[in-house]
Image (cartoon, rainbow, N blue to C red):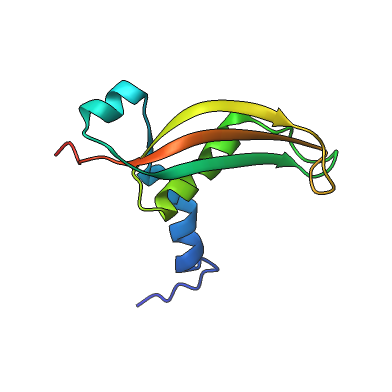
Length: 107
């Protein structure tokens, strides 16, 4: 019998895949799926220094999808993504705003 040791942590594993449980939809898809709003979400992509990648929409939306999942949502409709002025933490950042929904499964 083989023993496998890993640095994978169940908590980190769950957090890593959480955004995949949330589908990006448009408003008409949410209405067709009989979606119920669960709250507003925002996600940020932050460039903390010159060695980091520039902020991008995909990272900001992934952050928002993770937050939607934390609220019990399984869908999100994004309204806009905007650059944010530099701060002490981020030399550049981008924030995406949206509405999280709970939609019925299509199964």
